[in-house]
Image 1: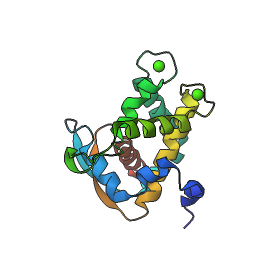
Image 2: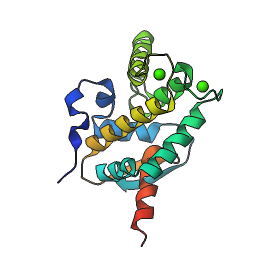
Image 3: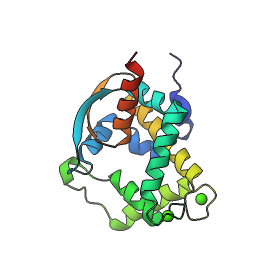
Image 4: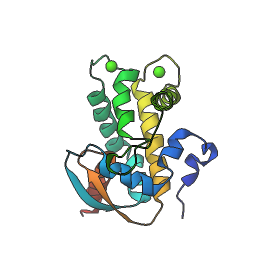
Length: 175
Ligand SMILES: [Ca+2]
Ligand SMILES: [Ca+2]
């Protein structure tokens, strides 16, 4: 196998890695994210995500759309406030079906701040497209790493990156 799960392993203390290091938790998070939106059940594994990330054209176009959707004031960069919604969607601290673990709001805010500062590589307080793309790629590869090669059945949200990865793969399977 020539997969490269070591992309993040040298930085296994990174909170981004911890966020996604457990496939079980990740499944749960995907399932509860934005409960009102359209869900579907799909089968995927880490290779699906790796493949999508490595397909530059498909991946870039998807990241571009995500960036544009988050950039509410359309100034070409993502502020902490704009990015916060996306970070909150990760539901770092949430447990089963909205029953929250008891967390200190300051602690939660601190983690979001820390994540944002990790993404903001030049520390200018906003994320430009390249910073956002790098962060997204890192997160996706961490998810792929967590999933491994065993196919898993997952409930996916329409428009989520995992759903996108599955759609991408299905276009590749058509002769
Ligand atoms: Ca903006
Ligand atoms: Ca920046």
